[in-house]
Length: 389
Image (cartoon, rainbow, N blue to C red; front, side):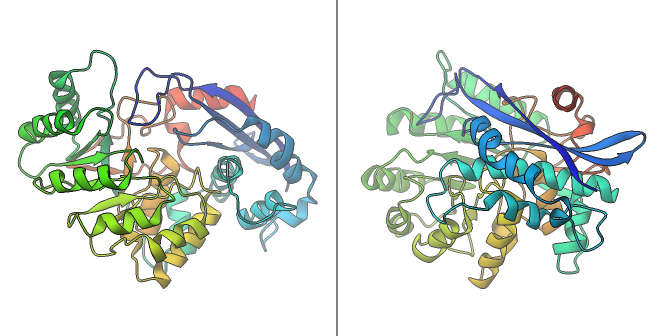
């Protein structure tokens, strides 16, 4: 078998929303199709992938560097020991050929996008949902749990959005079965943010929680000021207070905030994740890690990150990836992560779940669809199918 083509299209996911750092009015992503010569039901098996929101499409890197390396590789060098399927690690190695370590930049996003498509193809060729394939290969003997915790990410700033509109948004998530909701902070002064937070907390029913996300906006002094104020509330977490690579800030913040903290969505390699664990003061008994495979070289690298976490005494259950995509849902179900982010109303059609999947008591149940399950989401699959031809 062989990969016969690797196609990319850069598409807009523009929105008027903003967090404390960026607006999304010109945001794009890359959509990728890995076409194989394996035939199922009279059609070639095609694996699909895309990068998460918050980073732009990587069309140039994919077309100029990474796709040619895959297509130019000797086909047998990309196969597993059976010769009947792709080996994602070998495809990853082919992509990384002639790349220096460090300075991960945007290439981690480009490779992560292709890696997602490769895993989709691998699971489809095996005739299994990806989450079940992952449990068999990398789950340490534990069966996959198709029930996955998800939280609703929203609470963005946009013109004219007042507190009643914010609480209406959060109420809509609760009505759809979510028990944890997340809102942005740091885009207005602290006093205004506290009014927003208290309004949401005031409408949450018993058993439901609020998380807040600063998107790396704060310097240490501001992060600490927020920490002191937020300590009065029982929050699900306080997320990414400062620059994601400022491990000293994160470590010092832990001295001022006893509640759960979360970070990691903007760390794009196992080495960067390891530096966070070594130097960032993160606490494995309460804090959360948000590494997103679609931005950080893909699942091949994410598996290395999970191995590193275990070596440092962290459970995979403390990982709740950023991104709100079906790839991380499969990883969470197959490898025992703590759950996944979800964007109920944003970044469509790339976010969300397959058609018919509903949130019940804060969890979804993974459908038994081959691969990642993109074919079960009709609006997304229409985009993908048009790329595959």
